[in-house]
Amino acid sequence: KVLTLLLGANDKVYWYEGITDAKLDSTDYSAEGLRQVILNKMEKVKGQFGMEDYEDFKTKEPRKGSFINVIIKPTKDSRYKNLVDALDEMAITKVRYSVILDISKLEEEFIKNPAAGLKFTAEQQVEAATQ
Image (cartoon, rainbow, N blue to C red; front, side):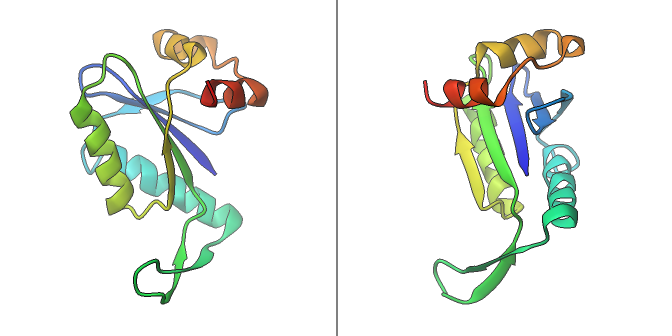
């Protein structure tokens, strides 16, 4: 259910799914780029977990939404505009669960050397998120 976005330099967004056996990919902030990555992940999550029933916050009407969880992690080389663009995409694609966290050293290394893989246990992910 998890999609992690690493906001990098030069208006590039790196992304990976899950924690174990993560494969790094990259895109831009366009509708054909980041938006399509999010929508594709939503379809995968929908196929595996279905849709979530919830009540609209404002209207109190019943709705259906994705179980997707998006973690947004800006690097020190990203721009503030990149974070705003990522948050805009959360609203456009109707992602209900997203969070902004600091990027970990392991993820910074992953960006530098994607072929080495992400050596990141679930415990390390929790530790990085709570620092």
